[in-house]
Length: 188
Image 1 (cartoon, rainbow, N blue to C red):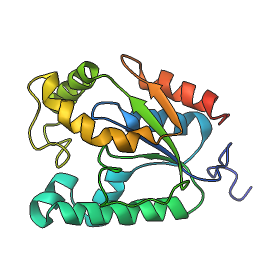
Image 2 (image 1 turned 45 degrees about the horizontal axis):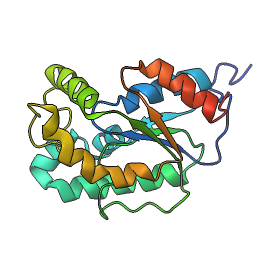
Image 3 (image 1 turned 60 degrees about the vertical axis):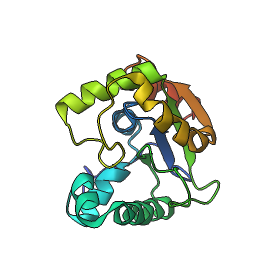
């Protein structure tokens, strides 16, 4: 019975599934739920950056600058996009922002977890109360009202718009969103 209790996926993917959305969309929580229900591997790309650099994203950008973070983000993404077995990736909101990180078309199935500005603000404020540095360097200072996020959302919408699947997640529990993704992408 050698390897009897080893991890075995119930689903095999031809390419990774990337979960992305605006601040507060809970992409990592949705990813955890998908992984637990399908047996697929899961990784938060920001956690991969932290692991590879030996410090938090906030510490990395404070000590070495945003370019060091973006370079390591691209390196981690390239590794995950080319190294089977493919799984679920929670991408930071800035992963598709600007030309700093380049991803070839068709390298992953991108799922955009869309929230309206008011729900994003409420979720973000709740998350920042628990962890004030959670979104550094993505946000330089906590928003005081929903309108404070409008420009940041607008800057990221072009990257989000290229998603193969767009789901509205306003007020929905991450487990319900995960079940919808599993059903829509036939991951079961």
